[in-house]
Length: 283
Image (cartoon, rainbow, N blue to C red; front, side, top):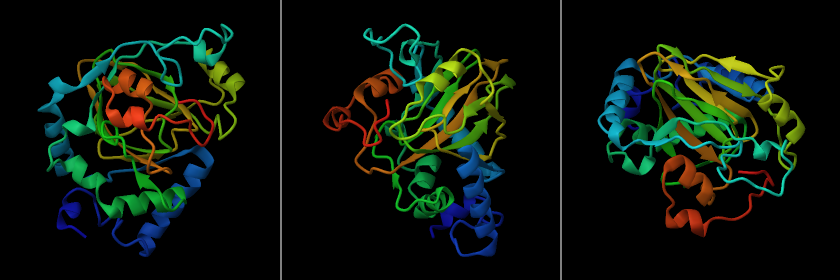
């Protein structure tokens, strides 16, 4: 284990370097149970306060390079109208987005977040929590461990992720709002469940759960199968989050449309690997 890891993660509470320890086995079992039931699990105070400050600084010193997306999108992160579909189809429902990312390719080589993402201890811990092995770090050079920025009045509408597993590490809370809401397992491989997705988009909250993250908390989330959003950020303080991601397919990256709409550009890798998804789900 690299000694730097102990300056980032609270290894006394969460000894992720030793997955056979009784303490971490208990945490893994808790996470796995919550993920199986709710598609989401939270580990409080996972990141040490000093490391949080370092992450905050490395984001803010490049905040002028954050790509802020303001275009309307549908739940599948498309901005283009598919005219062949009926007017009530979820793919035809577009919502305002004001949300941005410091893309992963802009991170310094000694970045705190980049270092954490590249540690096998974190990868193996997440794999144990989701109960799947192997899983892989995301090959997308823009999105693999991006910082998410929601400025005042920022909003992230209902959507699905393109990767199976996303971590969220709260860096800075807004004064008000910016609440994470989600509908566990509303779709599954081969079944989009458009009818239930449409109900949520129309305001039905029967399936909606909320999660309030605190700085330093780690959220493990199955966002590919769970419709989710972040409510409007209120007040004068931005909401900062790290979102390292993991996938089942080491070859997969975002589609060109997704990359352009969310990360502001398309790289050759997005064009070269633009193939239909094995799970049959819209992206």
